[in-house]
Amino acid sequence: MEKNSKIFVAGHRGLVGSAILKNLQDKGYHHFVLRTHAELDLTDQSAVCRFFEEEKPEYVFLAAAHVGGIMANSRYRADFIYQNLMIQNNVIHASFLNKIKKLLFLGSTCIYPREAPQPMTENCLLTSSLEYTNEPYAIAKIAGLKMCESYDLQYGTNFIAVMPTNLYGPNDNFDLETSHVLPAMIRKIHLANCLMQADWAALRKDLDQRPVEGVDGKAESDDIERVLAKYGVFPDRVELWGTGRPLREFLWSEEMADASVYIMEKVDFADLCKGQGPDIRNTHINIGTGVEHTIREVAQMVCRVVGFTGTVNFDASKPDGTLRKLTDVSKLHKLGWHHQVELEEGIDRLYQWYLKNS
Ligand SMILES: NC(=O)C1=CN([C@@H]2O[C@H](COP(=O)(O)OP(=O)(O)OC[C@H]3O[C@@H](n4cnc5c(N)ncnc54)[C@H](OP(=O)(O)O)[C@@H]3O)[C@@H](O)[C@H]2O)C=CC1
Ligand SMILES: C[C@H]1O[C@H](OP(=O)(O)OP(=O)(O)OC[C@H]2O[C@@H](n3cnc4c(=O)[nH]c(N)nc43)[C@H](O)[C@@H]2O)[C@@H](O)[C@@H](O)C1=O
Image 1 (cartoon, helix red, strand yellow):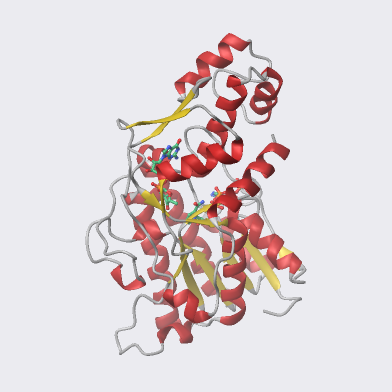
Image 2 (cartoon, helix red, strand yellow):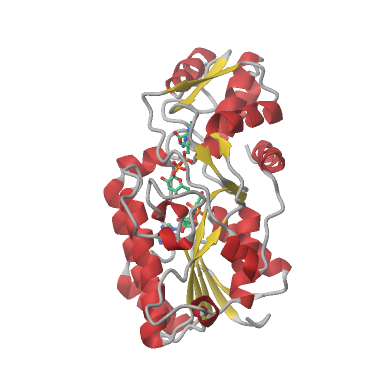
């Protein structure tokens, strides 16, 4: 990529897309073409074709997707498979038709089998069944990575697919139902701490910024307490989901962005085929830290960062999802990229960001 290359960051207001845009700007890239979801619905094939024909971007970061945590994935199964297939089909095919020089597709490590040997290498793709809670989303992501690989093999494009572990950072989704675990824990434990201290001003400020169904910043104290209890938030305790025993790996979103830009600058599809025989496959790249923690340990870290002294309980009637999904990051390390931000530091950064933005 040249500093004046025309770059389309799809999903530039999301958790990862916003970090990619910032990373590119910090590195001196300055020629962007950007559209919000309202301006360009990427599930609309003719609108996407028109956009590519008119704008002719040279490079594409595909960070737009229908995204959510375990509850959103398991409830809204049709939305997760339909929207993600449509977005990626439209953007990847339009990139081929318009001779885009390089594209980066973001998948997820949930593409790997539920019982995959740990840590999971790129080669364990499609070796056994997927985790049920996010099977529709995972199937869309597998289709996306296979689409990139197939276009590269048939048409000689340079479309690279990366599979990030669980991510967290600025511009995360803090919804109490649909978010991923880290933003959910930060908000729930923060709200419980405010209830414990009867800090109604802080509670109302939070609910003004991010309304919860049934309460906003003008609600009476009793109503706030009643509604937050539905989400497991009490003045003396927080009830989180599942058993607390699943292991998860977390990468700071700005590091995910750095890895994405690094790969776009330094890695070509041809590099990912080296050493393979005629049946080239599994050319995607895992992106993670290679470090895992139990959900209970993560909750303890969040309590320390927030300063919450109440208790944390787990509601085993809620799903655990995959018990372990640690990425093998050898391929990424061989390509020359390593993470730096460890989890407790990242939680502290995200909590400070959250306080400033609520
Ligand atoms: N968050 C995580 O833990 C992980 C994320 N990933 C992957 O990383 C990528 C980015 O995820 P993340 O940043 O977390 O997601 P976010 O939900 O934060 O952002 C998604 C972005 O996609 C845009 N978008 C969604 N649907 C459409 C549409 N139909 N048309 C146009 N734009 C649309 C949204 O636009 P707008 O803001 O305008 O609504 C938003 O900017 C995704 O591919 C995701 O699967 C992979 C592993 C983990
Ligand atoms: C990135 C990845 O994210 C999703 O997979 P997931 O890792 O299972 O998602 P999660 O972050 O929502 O949960 C992680 C763990 O945490 C536990 N947990 C506890 N308490 C809360 C809680 O309050 N909220 C949430 N969301 N989880 C909680 C929860 O029970 C689970 O054991 C995929 O669907 C898919 O989108 C994907 O690719």
